Length: 242
Image 1 (cartoon, helix red, strand yellow):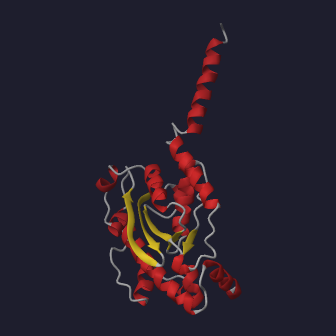
Image 2 (tube, one colour; image 1 turned 60 degrees about the vertical axis):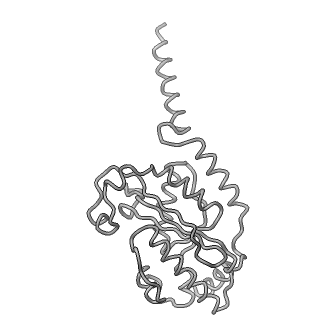
Image 3 (cartoon, helix red, strand yellow; image 1 turned 45 degrees about the vertical axis):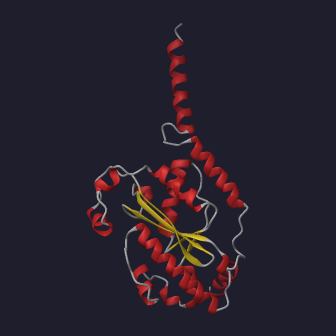
């Protein structure tokens, strides 16, 4: 009888560990995990490298965040995306705010126009990411200067679902560095103005996704002029420039 409290204690610890592993305490949902794993299997069978740009379907996306460093506590507060189908910007779009229950940095409020009231009733990031991936399906993703998006998607995927983020993310800069290496660090609004793209709804996730989508189509036309018709040829051209 003297060991009974100890046994109960061990069992309670085991229960907590299992809850952590399978989702309860970390907010992980078994259905979400199953969905992510199924999508990853589909992605492994998807090869986009040789698809002509005119037939390549992509999802262009943008995120707004509270800062630049997800590993230091900065968080995604909105996601916007729009599809390019057969080389043309479609009307098929996605947008969601993300729940955030802390004070927003004043510079983020000024930049994005968002407030705490906008975010407090928004869905949690786990639900938003699943909805976003259901929208994207197996399409490759496109972002402008994509390291920001990559770091947050990778961090969030691992934290929420304990799995790497496996979607290919294409960066607009790897296209325009072929035609003009001086544009490597251009901001979205600057390069849009260079290509005569009207800048609207800047620093709104869906607005920036739409701008980037139009820019992507312009850049595809540019790389066609130098003889690149698909991603494989673009990467080969970049390798020759190094």
